[in-house]
Image (tube, rainbow over all chains, first blue to last red; front, side, top):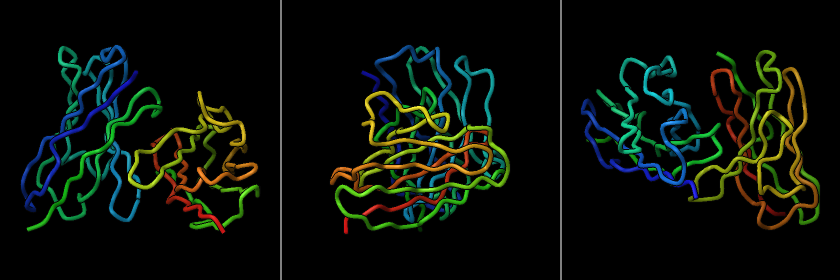
Length: 114
Length: 105
């Protein structure tokens, strides 16, 4: 059974950095592209970006590429999202997803507030 | 960027009724569209991919259609477990529609 478990969310101050993780199981992690998607409290869904199965290539939503970095460790079956200089508008639930968005984690909530 | 306009924003329907939700893309997306269902407090679940292909395990009362810039999700014989929000997403730059909240009348 495919499982994706995100962690690392919480309350963070504006301007700070935060790193989210997504541990995968139930499939060959190193064979698949992985994506991050976020959902705001108002339920707006936004694709953040993705990473190639070997980690050699990443794509980002243009509005986020200067502050967010996606990486992966195939030996640990783990996907990461490094967020820097966070803003209040980054408050959202962050999901990892894979296999053409067929599988999603449960999400981790990031709240940016002073 | 390709914009996705989803309608209606909310919808109230009776059990057994047929419901249709629509998404319009700002340019031709060549059937590169998915539909998701999201229940309160849960993650999105894939229903339809490539505009009209039913994802594994999804009940056959759900169907997708469309082409070019216009796409729709139809739910036949609405069931109580279909109460949820529904989102479309295009595959070119992965933008989502704003969502449709479906409630029972």
